Image 1 (tube, helix red, strand yellow):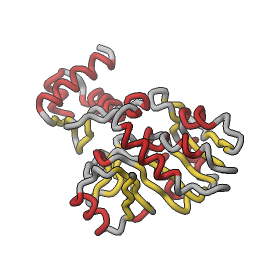
Image 2 (cartoon, rainbow, N blue to C red; image 1 turned 135 degrees about the vertical axis):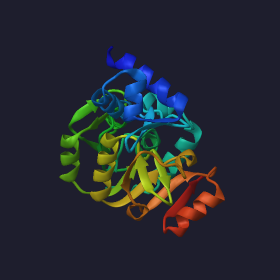
Image 3 (cartoon, rainbow, N blue to C red; image 1 turned 120 degrees about the vertical axis):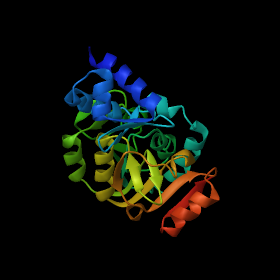
Length: 253
């Protein structure tokens, strides 16, 4: 049985049960615990299940992991967020841009800036800005994730750690007052963490559907974020929770 066949069986079993341990999956599917663990790692990296201590559980709202998938979701709000975030970029700035679809929405507004330097792991960002004379691009090197159209891995983190930017613009899979910043992928969380630690200011861009939601990997605190830029559909209750934790929340028009 190949990985794709095993993946279908594992997904079906976990989704039906809600959650299962490695050993429960092993008994149910007649696979070795070692194979189950290895497959669960890959499946959770794709955002299809949430890893738990000893097993996995289903996701109520499955995460879209590909750039093309994400770019079509909540697009109107993402464009407003991108426009608002671009206002914080000044002429002459050096900025980090991650591979998120909301961050990508900044590009059309960055074209109006003068003499800015963009350091990014995103191929769509590079393609959108490559012909703009007033913008220089530093493309991060490393392993290419074809689905996300982005560069990840240890080499990419080392690349980021060799630079400093005035501002970083990042996205997340989840943010909450209780658990801070979370992601479903170790690859993306390590890149995002590197952007945060090498920037003087960090702006988190995400639509309101991700706020109050926690994903699998905790990788950052709210204290590391200068401002959250989101849409006006954010509930007053969730906004108040974040503000009480000291986070500056900006609602895009």
